Length: 567
Image (cartoon, rainbow, N blue to C red):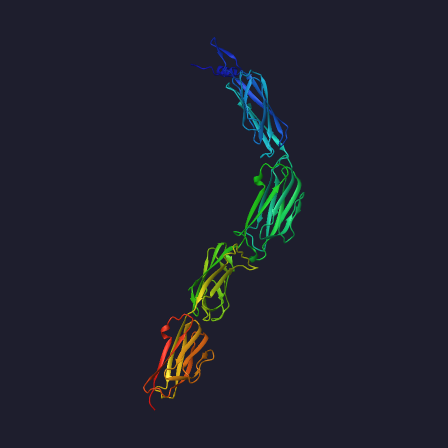
């Protein structure tokens, strides 16, 4: 069928007007159409926190048809609670409870006639600490009747909160990383992000970070600043009675990092500084009221020392070996690391094995003193191992604890290299000393054979084959059995007791500190009794002993024999 295009367009236009068309003698009714719209206003604007906002809401039907089942919705805005809602009697509404939140929903019990305007009043209460300086509320209207212009079916109203301003603070640092002994500069910006309200009684606080001291503060116009004394620590404060809407202020804070490498005890090689801003005006966003800046400290490295000792226990007079490990736990290379180890009491230096890249100095062999080792740098994650050998002096008493501590450090005043963890900078090894002395004795008798009434000389040779000094070494010899005692002679460090000349009895000689390698000769002169039987063997036994453990007691006694012959 052929379609008359201009006529078709006319039908559409007239239908929108609610007209009735005549086509081919037949009346055609246009479909119903109702242009609903909503208009909203607020009072007061601005509103104080803790006060009420009243919204006037007008719903209008621009027709041309009646609006079937019209509906109005209005959600109680954020940062407010419901107070009341006034409506026309032709509407049925559901509302939140007073003090609650939710959505107001209204349905008209009858169709809304063309050209009719109906008014509603919504009252909400602004909370005392809103999270936004703007309260936004939207009302929407709809119906089941076709609406030729949906663009006016909603209307929003934004209400400013008086005495509300979002203040924020940001911070940057320079340089990063920073070297100990130099200046670290913080740039701190305080801003009022609100476009309408000024922020009142604004206060900035920034505490001088650990391991730094105050140098200077550039205070912007309008602010009153109170810093610590130069070289001191403590908080920096700055106040401003009013910071205009949209305004910002920039502070320049300078601090000095440490003074020497040993004065810095930073955690994780980081200097942390935090600035905080507050105001007496309501601040809807507290998340931007603080700014923290972490600055890495250059050449910062956690050096750690460990130490083991072998053997344990150790025998006095023998060597004791220490294995010392220096490790860099990072995060940076350690500059000019130094190992220091004071040789413990009761030891003397033997040797040190110095790893590649290190320079070691030590006492002369056989002397006490300090072993040191230095290097220009130890890389992050690198390890240096030293082998230090000392001799435990033979005189060391048994049960003596030999304690040795190694200490590692790094950096100098001119080349700072801070260490964030001092607890692992030292390592101690404790070893218990024991004594062991192999005492031995040999003995001869001259002359052999010997005549009755004549003298016989016993030569006793006492030796300490070590390795330790023998404490209270004693030589015992019984003079008797056909002979009588005449005299005894011994070195100066031996003390002897004996029977009276011409009598039998025990000879005892004591040395309170018989050293390893010592060999001493004790001579006992006796006389063969005149009535000693001819042919009898004159036997004499000498024994040596000490409280010091002796690993070989088989050589601790010897007997010398001489035969008595006729005249």
